[in-house]
Length: 119
Image (cartoon, rainbow, N blue to C red; front, side, top):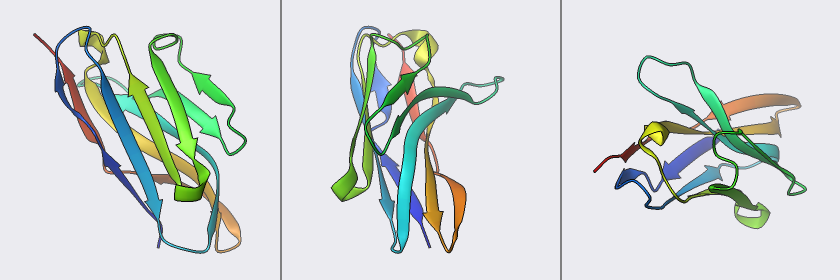
Protein backbone atom coordinates (compact mmCIF):
# COMPACT_ATOMS: atom_id res chain seq x y z
CA UNK A 1 0.00 0.00 0.00
CA UNK A 2 1.43 3.35 -1.08
CA UNK A 3 0.99 6.37 1.15
CA UNK A 4 1.99 10.01 0.69
CA UNK A 5 2.82 11.83 3.90
CA UNK A 6 3.08 15.61 3.83
CA UNK A 7 4.65 18.00 6.30
CA UNK A 8 5.72 21.61 6.58
CA UNK A 9 2.54 23.66 6.41
CA UNK A 10 1.68 26.43 8.82
CA UNK A 11 1.04 30.11 9.34
CA UNK A 12 3.40 32.66 7.84
CA UNK A 13 3.35 36.40 7.27
CA UNK A 14 3.20 37.86 3.77
CA UNK A 15 6.64 37.84 2.22
CA UNK A 16 7.71 34.88 4.32
CA UNK A 17 8.78 31.38 3.35
CA UNK A 18 7.73 27.80 3.98
CA UNK A 19 9.00 24.45 2.80
CA UNK A 20 6.67 21.54 2.21
CA UNK A 21 7.80 17.93 2.06
CA UNK A 22 6.04 14.81 0.84
CA UNK A 23 7.39 11.30 1.20
CA UNK A 24 5.98 8.23 -0.53
CA UNK A 25 6.09 5.11 1.60
CA UNK A 26 5.50 1.50 0.71
CA UNK A 27 7.23 -0.88 -1.64
CA UNK A 28 7.06 -2.27 -5.13
CA UNK A 29 6.34 0.96 -6.94
CA UNK A 30 8.08 3.30 -9.36
CA UNK A 31 7.29 7.00 -9.34
CA UNK A 32 7.12 8.98 -12.55
CA UNK A 33 5.84 12.38 -11.59
CA UNK A 34 5.34 14.05 -8.22
CA UNK A 35 3.86 17.41 -7.51
CA UNK A 36 1.76 19.80 -5.50
CA UNK A 37 -1.77 21.04 -5.95
CA UNK A 38 -3.73 23.43 -3.77
CA UNK A 39 -7.32 24.19 -2.96
CA UNK A 40 -8.53 27.42 -1.42
CA UNK A 41 -11.97 27.71 0.23
CA UNK A 42 -14.69 27.86 -2.39
CA UNK A 43 -12.29 27.19 -5.25
CA UNK A 44 -11.32 24.19 -7.32
CA UNK A 45 -8.11 22.31 -6.75
CA UNK A 46 -5.36 23.73 -8.96
CA UNK A 47 -1.90 22.79 -10.05
CA UNK A 48 1.00 24.43 -8.23
CA UNK A 49 4.03 22.56 -9.53
CA UNK A 50 5.09 19.13 -10.74
CA UNK A 51 8.41 17.45 -11.38
CA UNK A 52 9.24 14.32 -13.35
CA UNK A 53 11.60 11.55 -12.33
CA UNK A 54 14.13 13.14 -14.67
CA UNK A 55 13.88 16.42 -12.80
CA UNK A 56 11.86 18.49 -15.28
CA UNK A 57 9.71 21.01 -13.40
CA UNK A 58 6.43 22.61 -14.36
CA UNK A 59 4.92 25.59 -12.53
CA UNK A 60 1.65 27.44 -12.46
CA UNK A 61 2.10 31.00 -13.70
CA UNK A 62 0.98 32.35 -10.34
CA UNK A 63 3.98 30.83 -8.52
CA UNK A 64 6.75 31.10 -11.10
CA UNK A 65 9.80 32.83 -9.68
CA UNK A 66 8.59 32.36 -6.09
CA UNK A 67 8.22 28.60 -5.63
CA UNK A 68 10.77 25.89 -6.37
CA UNK A 69 9.97 22.21 -6.63
CA UNK A 70 12.62 19.55 -6.18
CA UNK A 71 12.78 15.85 -5.45
CA UNK A 72 15.03 13.19 -3.98
CA UNK A 73 14.43 10.02 -5.96
CA UNK A 74 16.37 7.88 -3.51
CA UNK A 75 14.01 8.96 -0.73
CA UNK A 76 10.87 9.09 -2.89
CA UNK A 77 10.38 12.60 -1.58
CA UNK A 78 9.29 15.84 -3.20
CA UNK A 79 9.79 19.32 -1.76
CA UNK A 80 8.20 22.68 -2.41
CA UNK A 81 10.15 25.74 -1.34
CA UNK A 82 7.75 28.67 -1.18
CA UNK A 83 9.19 32.17 -0.97
CA UNK A 84 7.63 35.63 -1.11
CA UNK A 85 4.34 34.18 0.02
CA UNK A 86 1.17 36.15 -0.58
CA UNK A 87 -2.24 35.97 1.11
CA UNK A 88 -3.63 34.46 -2.09
CA UNK A 89 -1.33 31.47 -1.58
CA UNK A 90 -3.46 30.47 1.39
CA UNK A 91 -4.88 27.01 0.72
CA UNK A 92 -4.68 23.36 1.58
CA UNK A 93 -1.73 21.95 -0.32
CA UNK A 94 -1.93 18.38 -1.56
CA UNK A 95 0.92 16.16 -2.63
CA UNK A 96 0.35 14.08 -5.74
CA UNK A 97 2.27 11.18 -7.25
CA UNK A 98 1.80 9.31 -10.50
CA UNK A 99 3.32 5.92 -9.93
CA UNK A 100 3.49 2.40 -11.32
CA UNK A 101 2.43 -0.33 -8.94
CA UNK A 102 0.73 -3.72 -9.30
CA UNK A 103 1.16 -3.59 -13.10
CA UNK A 104 -0.70 -0.31 -13.58
CA UNK A 105 -0.33 3.45 -13.31
CA UNK A 106 -2.23 5.22 -10.58
CA UNK A 107 -2.56 8.68 -9.09
CA UNK A 108 -2.07 9.01 -5.36
CA UNK A 109 -2.88 11.95 -3.09
CA UNK A 110 -1.68 13.00 0.32
CA UNK A 111 -4.01 14.09 3.08
CA UNK A 112 -3.24 17.79 2.60
CA UNK A 113 -1.43 20.38 4.68
CA UNK A 114 -2.74 23.85 5.47
CA UNK A 115 -0.75 26.91 4.43
CA UNK A 116 -2.01 30.23 5.74
CA UNK A 117 -0.43 33.52 4.73
CA UNK A 118 -1.64 36.32 6.95
CA UNK A 119 -0.38 39.20 9.02
